[in-house]
Length: 226
Image (tube, rainbow, N blue to C red; front, side, top):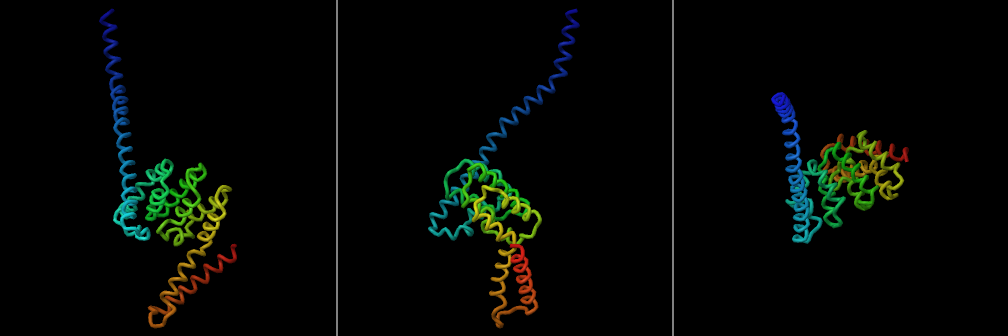
């Protein structure tokens, strides 16, 4: 009888051993991944600090887009969205927060929409100021929202943001300005002034006529939908 009980115990032990090993491995994996995530976050924070120090060193904030440290931060924008949101939720350093938001200017449409939605959630929670949400919507140094204003994903995003009561009036006006195509038309108007107002510098009459027609069309729609 004792042999039978011992045999059953050994069988049960061998049956549950893989499960115990899996749980142990999962526990070990969790213990390993947490420090790695923290190291990744701290590395991100240090990169922001490096950009800030470079700006102070040059004493020319307008040079920010051309700084190597900022370009490196921006190049990893897509992979750093979670880190950026975490940083904005924790840090109170105004200058560094602005660097973090501005560095997201290389995002594509899908990541831009997702990033702005998360900025809006921070704003709803009181963790993001209106003057920080605005450059996030503008896209920082990017023309993406202006150029892609008619993209259904961007149109839906702006429509939803404009309907939210806690979005400040000035930001709603920014949203209207981009969403209506007015920002796109004004950008094209600058292109027209640069390329089509001097006969000696005009590259193509047909291109300028096409550009003028595009500007007129967008402005007309913008005025009619106000």
